[in-house]
Length: 492
Image 1 (cartoon, rainbow, N blue to C red):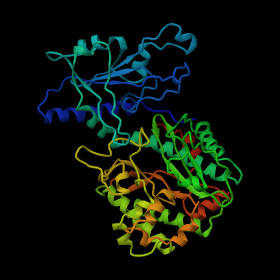
Image 2: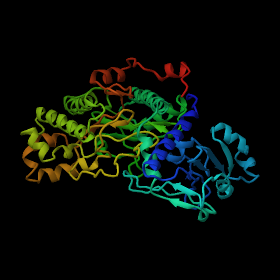
Image 3: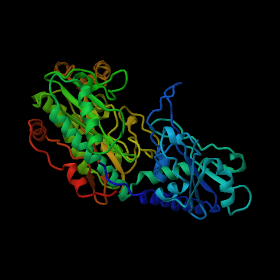
Image 4: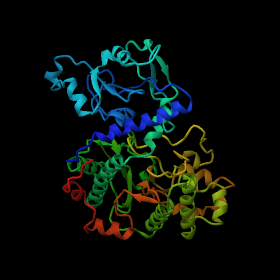
């Protein structure tokens, strides 16, 4: 059973937004009135059927209000700070099929808002609350998600034509609020990390040659739900073994974690649980038979050294691009020592050879979404070089950011073959040795890291050293059990 969640967190988030929005309006010599208005998520059916997919709240709405129910709207009065929840007016037979119809007083008290009304009353309620002259102004959420290239949709409701609308102001301010985590948010992310780390250890212990990848996925899902109360995963589980571990986003419907584990394969398991909207994102790589070969040790150690070098260097003011470049360089130096590549590492860096072995970015913000927004401020442009163009942020680190550190090294034919035929990169590649790694797949090590005032803190508690992994897979105990946290009555 998971810890109790304190709704004060969402009250604090609303206060943070109000302070930032009021400061922005004051700086622009604009009046401090109007309403922030958000529309929560709606339940979705499977195509044309009546099968309802399990609902999960839209993340901006969850950040400000913590509402788990579908069909809600919410407003914040910029002048007074009052918060208003608008609940759907449910039909009487809802009580027969879906349970008790909660009174408005329940939503007011449970979600700690100033008042609660019905969603068919939005226009009249907001007009009654409005203190200014002319039409009330609505600050609506509309902006680009730089990970998906999708736009958030502004709220729509009957009577919206009776209001003035501002579609530009809210999104960047609210997004920036989400970038820096509060102590209560950090506690939730830590809890998700604790139970997910423990589930990864359980998967390691139970991995055996001859199993199916999806059986290991099911162990993770069961553990985080059964013992952690995590009904949702942060993302689709990636349970890749053998050559599948070179497929960066393996596990989708066309590649459904269904390979049989074979002796000598590496496993790459990227799985993270979500608790009260806040997620984790953890990757462990290990040999399915529990013992590293010399080749597996070479690649794994290259990635682990990069992972550890980045975490050692992280602190406020450090630029994320520099961390990506550091990870690339450490991996290339290791591959050179293993005679997989030849030549001067600085020349390799200039030729962007690192992107052949690590085509993805080093990491991303984490919070209510696996790829949390805010990676690119308005004046920041995405890099165009291979590897660097995949970075989900290029910002300087700040205290309170939570970001994944996930270097990897993969043997991907779709990248290695063109590199071998390119005059810029072929001179660095030892074809004979690289051919030995055909079908090897890849290694990724991913931890969730909090930037602190003087450095950083690794929130992920998985075995990482080769000695630790082999011992755990042979049955040795692993510390930092989630039961100690839950047993101590952690309240978030």
